[in-house]
Image (cartoon, rainbow, N blue to C red; front, side, top):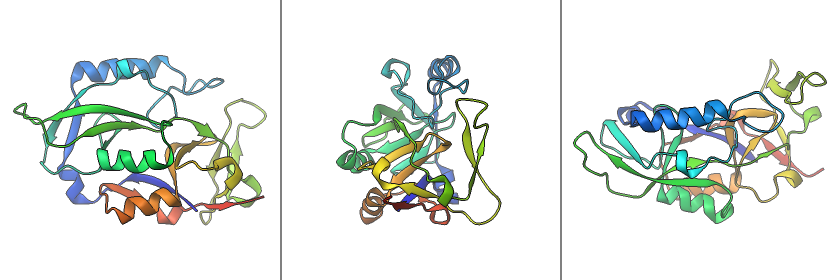
Length: 212
């Protein structure tokens, strides 16, 4: 089984807001605007396209503008996901060296550095593991454009994935169903066992992994 992982939108997490400094935000935005998400598409790269991001365009400092509480997973204003060293360690136990973790310093409004090690997390790589005839998806643009994609059909959620294509991956992006991150049940279990905070596993959109 796999899950789509997202930020937890609980109100208490909304009390904490972290953003980029303006010059850093512009540098990062310029990279995304001029970079294709992957070969054969006109879609721009983003934090959820699986694109490898050059470290030199990623900020090294962030600003805490609201709240005090830090979590293991926080969505940054302006895009991107901030994670703790504990979450980084969990991912790298399963996917060593596969994804990008950019170390950052988080400062409050007075310039005081928040304790702990934090990273901007980027899931790298795209795979095609969706089994179409067993999923409640429809193909959009197939036969017309190289970068065709799936969208959900009306009715109940059903997504079946090919376990052989996923292999041992812990995190990935589906090439034909983008704009979200998938995680394996093994990683999901570890995140929950260690009581990491800030993320949400969409249990209404779990995906079965099967062997063909």
